Length: 67
Image (cartoon, rainbow, N blue to C red; front, side, top):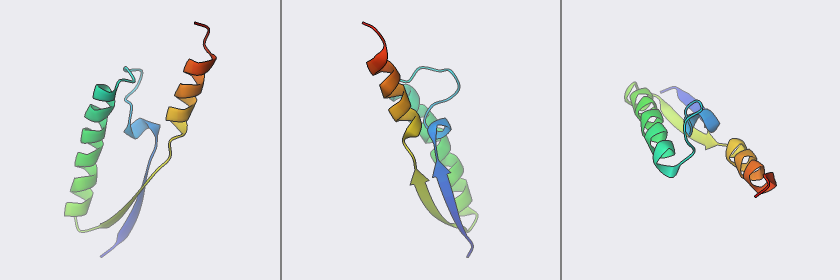
């Protein structure tokens, strides 16, 4: 059985210029999970890694914006 490492970044959590709400992110994650499930069903062993760079960057933008 072949092994794959799938690294999920910001595009796996937020689609395009859509809203960064929890609901919107959940919809994108569900779509991404479907693709990963297809890969696993195809006979691959999968390791999933995630970086939170885009989310940290978004937080920093919100912190630095004037109120």
